[in-house]
Amino acid sequence: MKKGAKHSIKSTLLFDDPFWVVIFERIDGNGYSVARHVFGDEPTQVEFHDFILKQMDILRFTTPDKEASVVLKKKNPKRQQRDAKKAMENGEAVISKAHEAMKKELDKNKKERSQISKAEKEEMARIKFALKQEKRKQKHKGR
Image (cartoon, rainbow, N blue to C red; front, side):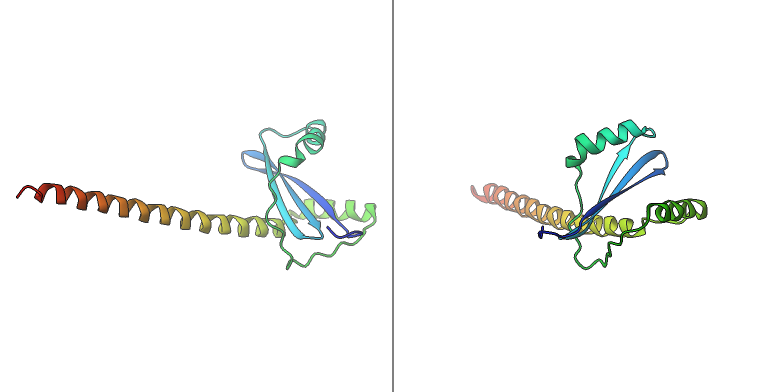
């Protein structure tokens, strides 16, 4: 990361039936990335704080997206509270960018897995065919 570069991590706790999920959005010199962690029951503030202090390093963030236009603006804390309250009242999805980034990463991983499994299937078919040919040769050897 560049010296003097701004960076921040934002966490959003939400109920994704039947579990409580926290979504972390990270903005740094590398770009915008997202991580998701599933809590079973609703975490208390102490549990959430302990998770951040002790287990934050286990989070697997998506690959940084440099194209994401993210502007870090300093907001007045009271303004932030008002905006959060208004979003809660209106039921707005304030984490759509995070969902989009996670969806993009899932699609990328799915394509990679399908390519790997396709290659493995082709290899197994080749081996099976070779065994079948060998067996066929063995049958006709004595005649």
